[in-house]
Image (tube, rainbow, N blue to C red; front, side):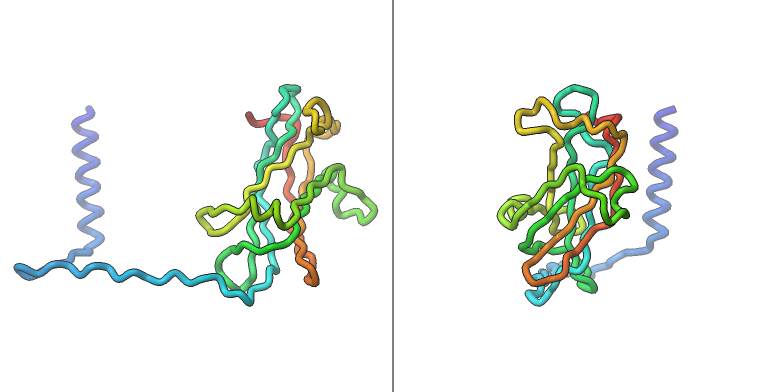
Length: 184
């Protein structure tokens, strides 16, 4: 059975490769040219952040073992459309947690808020497949890690805001995260 599967896989691979039809032929003694290095464009200095993508994990993790999610990891991308790649910029990032549905109410206050000033945001810089980003971690726990995560809600809405002095506040869309069935 395994030999038949191997033979079939090899035949399929051969068929796919032959259909691609990409063959390079060289004359006797000729060697292929070395690829020329492509210059990677640097981020233009004139870019102004006008979009933010906030991508938290779907389930908060339970770090104190009480069955409630209390830690959230998120990836944040800043964009300057129409520039096609995300970028790193100095500024302040604020992540706010609201009861589901409360964010649209102008009088609603966040249940929790985390502020990442420029130096903390610089420390969170990373690179992902789409490009430069920030890896952020927030915790519902108090500093003593014994309380703070019992909000009596199953899910929460998170929103991120990016602020640069003298510029418009850039706000992400809402991201709903589950707190009642924590990932581990």
